[in-house]
Picture 1: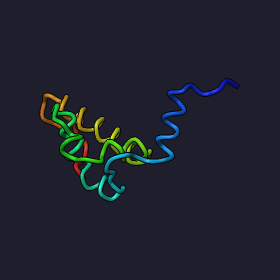
Picture 2 (picture 1 turned 180 degrees about the horizontal axis):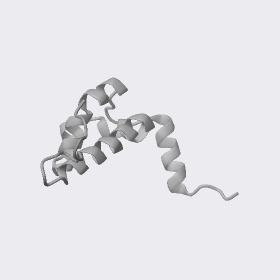
Picture 3 (picture 1 turned 45 degrees about the vertical axis):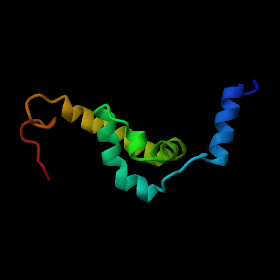
Length: 94
């Protein structure tokens, strides 16, 4: 087994010690995630609008997965040009 690179060591230390700046809790992240992802997809400065979100997402795999899923969902809806929001005929809204 080889020794980790200095970049890998830095990332590990950063994850263990936590962020230098503000960080949100999971509850705060969940409340602001829709707005954050919408800003990202619109090309806005999501990190400036919601300080601490980036640090939380880098340290919390559960919230990072929620972000990936939401980006995929909103990205597919934005790509739907027929206004169906990605739904196929006969698909239920419920």
